[in-house]
Length: 351
Image (cartoon, rainbow, N blue to C red; front, top):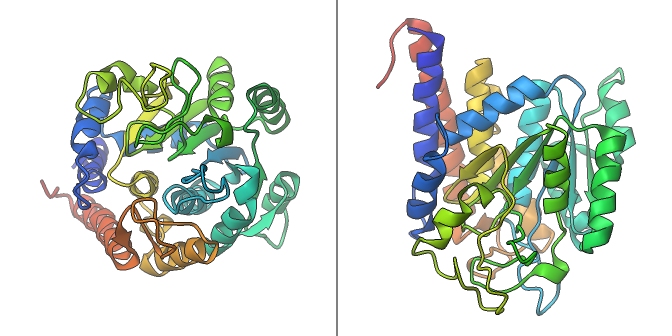
């Protein structure tokens, strides 16, 4: 069996899993075909290949996440979808590629994101300390969590500063609201979140000027990276796609594209899909975290008072699916990688 055949078949199965509409929200049935129509290969595999190619030992990767989910009540109310995926993917990038992860969130949720990052096994450090930790002996498993501005002008300045200082090999946005052509950010419900959302668009735009790899992960059509399919989203049946509630006239679909766009049922699952494909590429199934780690991550998010964005409850779950469902999903994803690798090594391929 050819290696490329094994990889592509594995990627197809992983994409089918991360796009399975378990919570019956329907958006993924629209978004995944649109995103896949722009890619020559499975979406998670395309992202994993890009990271394998661009990210080397001890290089920095920026992961942007965090959604102030009910900002009209309190901008510190964030959701579990996104932060959990970011921490899990940071773990996979560390174990698989030796990367140093710097996670970017709003200032108000730094403490909560740090708690989730620790549940992934990291000592949370400053970016400089995390880089130093990667070079230390004995090794310290370090990652950083820092704030990124909500003010547009400050965000543009900070984007240039961070890229010049840390020279990231890649930037990954996970469940991060993106700006439409009116520079407004919306929820999937059509509400405007511009004032309280970190303006990661400027970081991605600066990265694209410098040929730094960029990846966007989303599940509702309003996330950064969906600029890849912005026009298609506007013409779709997704609510508020072309005309939002705020009256700006731009709709919820962001304008900023990324090199690779992953549409997933739950954005966390898109991050897990990248990790699973990276595990398959490197033939190291252990790169993907297991159900126990998933349980710990979701519990840490709940302990940090992050809410399930769909139900509004502070519970260990995401997008209306409780922790046992996400644990089962990770188990199934991991088994898919293991079985694919087994068939590859035996010289056959499970079609």
